[in-house]
Amino acid sequence: VKKKKENFIGGAEMFGMMTKTQFLSGTKMAFLFIMIVMGISLFSDFGSAIVINEVELNPIGQDSGHEWVELYSATEFNLDGFYLQNNDGKNYSLNSSFTGYVIIQFSGLWLDNVDESVILKNLDNDTIDETPIFADPPPDTNNKTWSKCGNNWTLIISTRGLENLCPSPQNQQNNTQQ
Image (tube, rainbow, N blue to C red; front, top):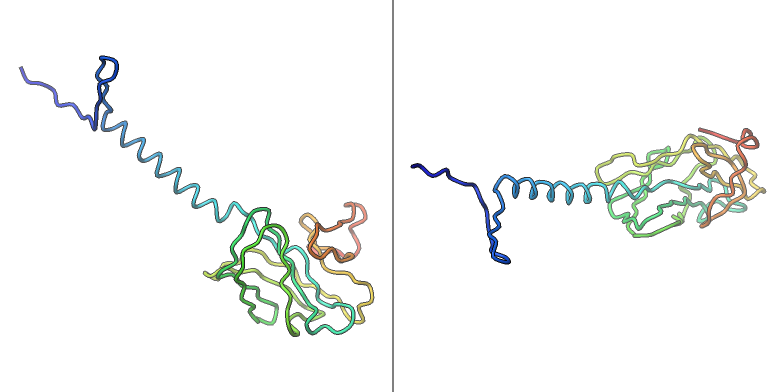
């Protein structure tokens, strides 16, 4: 009588009973474990969304050294290898970690008052977020910034480092860009 070969990867005796794990079942479990670990690592980078949240093109007074961009992430985000790019093609490297709001303050003139946009890119030059083309022509005496309000951008009073105080949707028609 020929005995059928069994595919077991292990076994143990507990309470007088012999238990064995079938090879196929163990393979399935290992595969499932690997997929879960890969899924967690894949989505940990993309699951923590980062957005450009507010842009100060034309600060009150002198622009040089007073222009800034605000980024937002609900979870800790590492900016190493990320950079901002303006509409003139100039790049500004980023290299910190943050949670919540972070202000990127430019030491000189980096943003134009008209025909300007900001693009956030990663090390692979992939666009992560970008703004539409903005204009905030001089003189700026209103302390307003371009702020993300839902899917739109609105020129409103600055909330630098805080949640944007977006107008209600029916009042959002003036000074809005998509």
